[in-house]
Image (tube, rainbow, N blue to C red):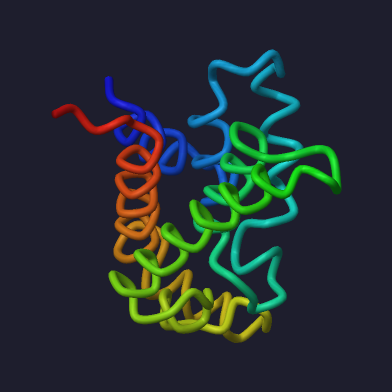
Length: 149
């Protein structure tokens, strides 16, 4: 099973978009899955219902931070590299989805009770969000896999 397939399976099994992406693409890290899912849990549904950045994208950015991030404020090269990667995935996500905001990519304001109810009724999780998770996973997989040739 590819990372993208596992990511989609986790999402369809009930993980949030952020949890599915972060939990899957950090399999090789020394953190238990339960811990990885907890770390990503505040970021699903538009950074936890704040109507902010799509949780799938936030999950991808968290992956980049864990895998490629810098820990010293003086690591100028590390900062530059991470920002370049983060910029690439953010731009590609916006290009594919028309925005980075949950409300705009899902079509619903998940920051309100009415918006969540309407999204649930429209089955946005299985009709739209699963494709956003799949696209994000594909983008991240391509970014993390060194090109051959």
